[in-house]
Image 1 (spheres, rainbow, N blue to C red):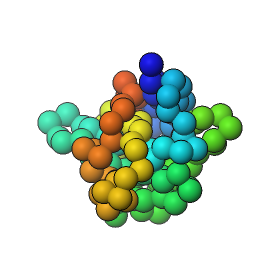
Image 2 (image 1 turned 60 degrees about the horizontal axis):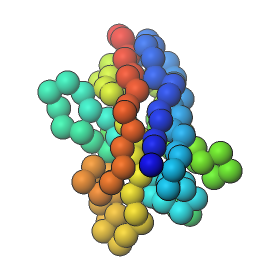
Image 3 (image 1 turned 90 degrees about the vertical axis):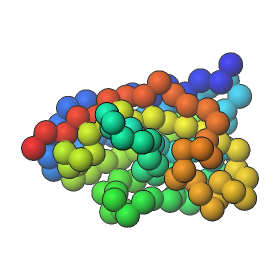
Image 4 (image 1 turned 135 degrees about the horizontal axis):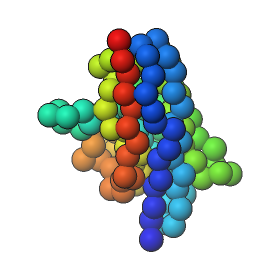
Length: 128
């Protein structure tokens, strides 16, 4: 059974930092999968905030560029999201996801529909 378990969420003030972790188990191997972090705020659609292909190259939307960093530790089968200079608009449930590294994924990795396996999420709340 494939599992993705997120942790590290919490409440911080604007300008603060958080580091999210996603531990993969089962059939998901972060060394060979394409992984990502997505978020969903109440009343909004789910959006990608960072993805990383199996070779380690990251992808970010403009909204988090320079503030968020995705990384992975293949030996620990874990993916991380370092979030700095957090803003109130970053408040959301954050989800880890895994995908097969298809050519379509490389074109649209930040699109949630490109991912197949999802964690349960971890809440991030940023106060002003």
